[in-house]
Image 1 (cartoon, rainbow, N blue to C red):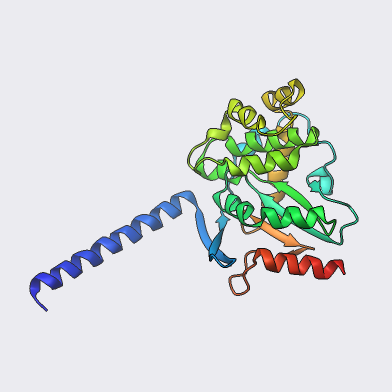
Image 2 (image 1 turned 180 degrees about the vertical axis):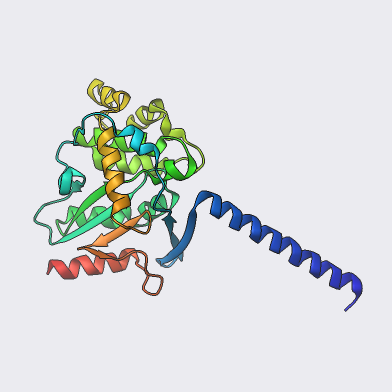
Length: 259
C-alpha cells in the first residue's frame, strides 16, 4: 500500500472518530440516549425509544401553580389517565407520550392504525399519560402547551383525533412550535367541531397546565425509561430489543386475550 493510500485511510478514520465524539457530546448535552429499536412490518421500519434523564423537566414545577383541573372523563390515580375505548375491553394499553418526542411520533405512525382497529372492535382500551420531558431536555414549553391543548380536546370529546393531528404535524424536536397557542389552535381546525370559543379559552388560559405538571411528575416518579413507554396489561412490551414489538404482534396479543 502506498504512503498516499495509508494517509487517506488514516485521515478518514480520524474524521470518523471526530464525528463520533461530536455525536457523543451532543447526546450528553441533551441527556438523551437511544437504546432500542423495533423492526416493524415487511418494510423494516424502526421505532426508536428515547431514554431521558430522571431529573429533566424542571419547567413543570413553575407550571404547577394553581388548581389542578382534571380533564373531563380522565381516570386512574389522581385522574391522570385519558381513557379511549370501551371499559369492557379485556386488554388495556397504557401509553406515556410527549407531543414533542420524535420517538413517540414514530410509534404513533407505526401503530396508530392497529390501535384504532382494536379499539373499534371493543378488544382494547387505551390509557394515555402525557409527559413533558422534551421541554426539560431541549428547553421551551411546547410539550406543556400541546399537552394542555390535548386535555382541552378531551373536555370537548375530541381527544383521539386531536392527539393524532398533533403527532402527524409534530415539528422537529428542536423547534418549539407547539409553544405557540396559535399553532395549536390552527391544528384544531383539522378536527371537525373542536375549535370552539370554549376550546380556545381553555388553550389560551392554560386551564390544564397544573394537571399536565402533575402528570409529568407522576411519569418521572414512575421510573419509566423514557417516552414512549408502552405497557399491555401492566407489562412493558415496547422496549425489548430481543423481542421487538410489531403491529401484528400487538394485534395477536390483544386478539388472543379477547377470546
